[in-house]
Length: 121
Image 1 (cartoon, rainbow, N blue to C red):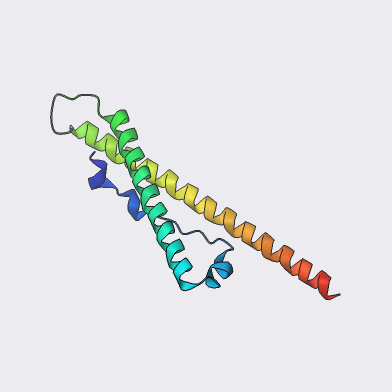
Image 2 (image 1 turned 45 degrees about the horizontal axis):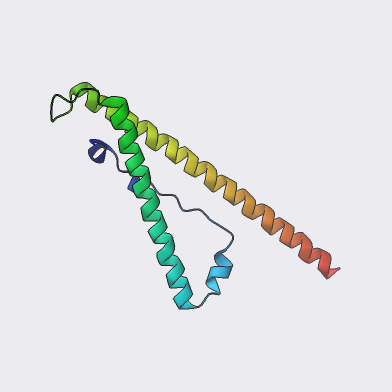
């Protein structure tokens, strides 16, 4: 619950570079706009899911006592550390996915170049 004040996962989004950019560039404007809107909707939905997961996880881990409306200093500190850890892990996963897809793109480009040079012979 207090995570909203300490960290906001919606600010931590990662753009992945998929090798479909050229195909999207060839799409009609209407289809491209529809795809863009759908991707934006999915990103917002996934960000909200991540945020809800973070709040749920940190609340369960840190808030034991429901006798007060406010969180104790110990609970605040726990929530802050929980959010920080969650965001660090999420950031690492995003970086790894980005690296992985970048490698996949390089392999695909290399294979395409080999196929094209084989056809030219």
